[in-house]
Length: 297
Ligand code: B12
Ligand code: SF4
Ligand code: SF4
Image (cartoon, rainbow, N blue to C red; front, side, top):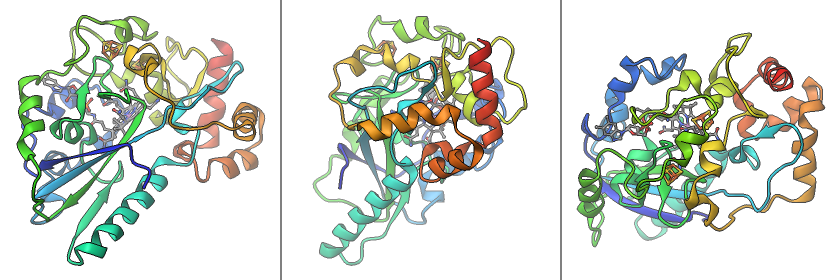
């Protein structure tokens, strides 16, 4: 279907130790993302999302491009291709259809960002990798340039070692398993959004939050966006696990040229391009605001 890996875990509630969402919210680290304050119980327990859920199937889709766009403006690489929500949902429906060919009663709910579930923590429970100091889920061989999604199902899968991933994640509860003594991402963040003293990203300081989720007319004065007008990849580009990961997406010449011309197009052309892209998350006025910020920087 195009997925790079998958893993399984038993559907049960994520404990406060495993997923300290309230701590992150209480510290105000979610900035203006009020949607993170809603449905917190559901975000923690997939059985509230799907009645009778027994299994979470975690799916990983690598997206590291074989090259980057050039020029003074950068767009985060996860937005180079088709909108991942659309692509992953389509792939999950295809997978569900395939499973149903053999097991007609199979019921599964595809989840990718649009429903309240914490993608990283299910991938962690499934034993597919760990959460790094940059807060991204790092797959053992694919690094962190990978999307995560889940199929929550009422099926109890045979021959699956449900507990192995869970045991591993509990042992290494506080992330950084696999990071060792490395601190490259913390040192590289131009805004101090990552810190040794906190396991969280402070979205208030993060370029990704500010260029995508922040709806204010002006961006914070002290934001150093380093050329990023949509998202930010700095804390991932420095990560050794990403440097050694194989490319998974071919950025062809015409798409590259399109991306590079995007900062100079009018509203109609921007809307046309962003229709099936992750860029559809922002409005043209935010796009213009971000370009101005980078130009001022
Ligand atoms: C809100 C959100 C954001 C926010 C906040 C980021 C954040 N770190 O939470 C903003 C807008 C900043 C953002 C940015 C990005 N995002 Co985002 N985002 C999400 C979303 C919707 C929810 C994440 C969430 O629950 N945050 C709440 C906090 C509490 O949880 P957490 O950071 O996940 O987990 C921390 C704690 O649990 C803590 N922890 C773990 N164990 C323990 C134990 C103890 C004792 C303690 C104290 C703490 C602790 O460590 C974890 C890591 O910091 C997910 C999709 C989803 N539904 O899951 C995508 C998601 C995380 N984002 C994704 C991506 C791609 C990005 C960007 C890379 C995009 C870009 N290039 O600009 C950046 C990366 C910035 C960064 N360094 O995090 C991917 C990540 C894939 C991966 N491999 O990890 C996801 C999973 C979407 C997807 N479906 O693929 N994002
Ligand atoms: S995405 Fe950019 S601003 Fe946000 S934590 Fe990473 S390096 Fe810092
Ligand atoms: S740069 Fe280093 S500390 Fe940061 S996530 Fe990668 S391995 Fe971990």
